[in-house]
Image 1 (tube, rainbow, N blue to C red):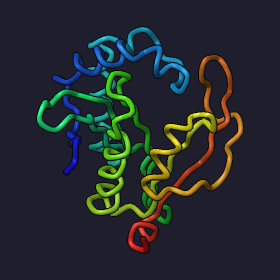
Image 2: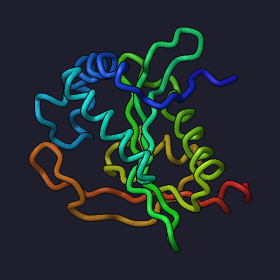
Image 3: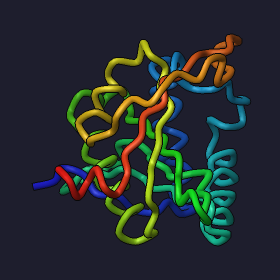
Length: 179
């Protein structure tokens, strides 16, 4: 039985997201790009969610809240972004779970759900994640979901004022049907 469910974020979720982000800010900071202060406010999150809805309508992104079964408490967020059609049929995936709910397997379950959504509903062929090599917990999340390491993207994202390398992990539709 799943301990979490995914639900598309709506503007009314902005306050919940802002509270979670603020409470987990120091915990998430080593892994996240630098953000303006407004990002951590309800208004800033309303803007992020509205942009996500517009990107969904354009077919380039899908963003979900991760919620606990039974309590309906928000535990984090997961998104498919940079969706490319044509010959590639690919999306990037990114996720975070609040510090207070970390280590419970929520990210692993959410990733499994969003990969199924990508392959079954969106009919994508590939989902990829970029992870800092020292983020062992996140690497465990993708590996539990059948992602394989494909290479290293040097100086990939600006995080904490430094250009950080990221390992690229991916899973394809065939990987899911072969296992």
